[in-house]
Length: 320
Image (cartoon, rainbow, N blue to C red; front, side):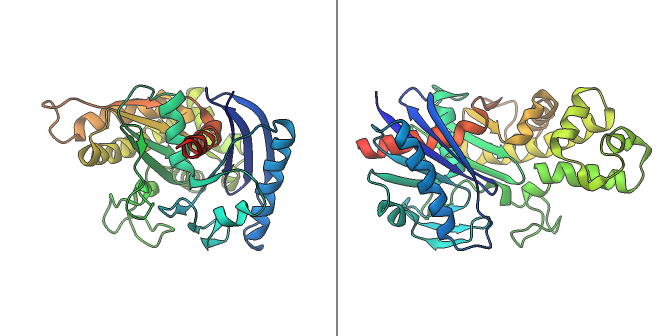
């Protein structure tokens, strides 16, 4: 049995798992992510701690894959920029090699998740896959003919920063009108909170759920309200789905995939989100009515896709 460790690093957690060649997780470990104001090395210390714990449970691990939320250079060794982790041109692979005695691979977390969905999840058997991860922002990745498309500099797939509204909402990246300002978890929560703060009567259900404290409202609360029939929450998710469909239509024009896989926390809304997305996609698709349409499906592997994909990519690299 070939085993590899996958590590998924986010702004709040470092999650690790020992993964076999069938994508099954045989052991798990987790730590809180150190605060980004601390030295970058403290995150590396946390990664090493997780890896050593997992290796103590499964000593026959052959490789370690790291999925990091940030820009990873094409060499899959250097984290160019990770805003939540204080990494700037961080030689992560070389730093870890000094402390972990197996081959190590570093990649973007969305690349790792998309690879997992292609190998073991919603996109199995598809030759051209685009994954869109809807979380706080929007990440993404491309898998074609069994290879992750990383771009010349390793930074392909940053779909959230496509401009969809010229001079629109200000984005943290410094530009305006980025897609993630309209189709992400942040966008959903921003609109819902604005309605509560305006004392809108149509937001009474949402306001009641958080005791009138708009700052306590989260995306999962909106999703739960929608599932329970709150018309305003259903409308808010449909609006996010509409913007999702617009962006996906643009991506179809660029990449012409057979399948779009929608992952990330917001995708938990299921058809409340994907139904409106498909409807808008069909209306906005270039050449609609005269070309095949990609299917739009929900991711299957949930929060564990990143670590599963990182482990499998590391195993693939170690065996090549």
